[in-house]
Length: 238
Image (cartoon, rainbow, N blue to C red):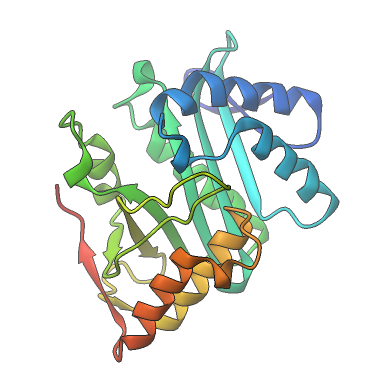
């Protein structure tokens, strides 16, 4: 048990042991499924746990942290992949229980995980997929405000999340956003970086075999091949 923040909040890193897998399973079923009901946007719990077991035999590129209070209530979680080739942290999900929102907890969690990655690895970029505001039907743009505060910027590309498994559909309602940790005012990003990212992310985070041949990846890389200049970075707005 690791005491992390004020108010007796603790964290558990998903590993091969039964205890951390039990805590993560609680997070998945109690928070993640509820917050992201679209099955096309997330892998099943069984797939995540199997991926974790496989990675423990190889190199762990995908990691997960679960946060809970002294009574054992799951209050938050974060899943990400570290792409060593790009010194990049790709955030897949960050979720906070409704009771604990608007207390700065998500910001603390993100800074905590960034610090842990930096402790053992080089880290130059943070990349995320987020919902395009035009598809938000309930008018809740708090996620946008959070990432705006983090100074994430939208990459000027029609982004498509590939189908995670057979029978799923690609997701075309997402934006790909980036933050350069050494240059908050960066206005462009290289086309080569983005091409490499979408293939590596599909391979390591989505577990797509031969990702460079996936139809969604080919649509994006085909578009990028037509670009002459670096890609513009656009400030987030709602």
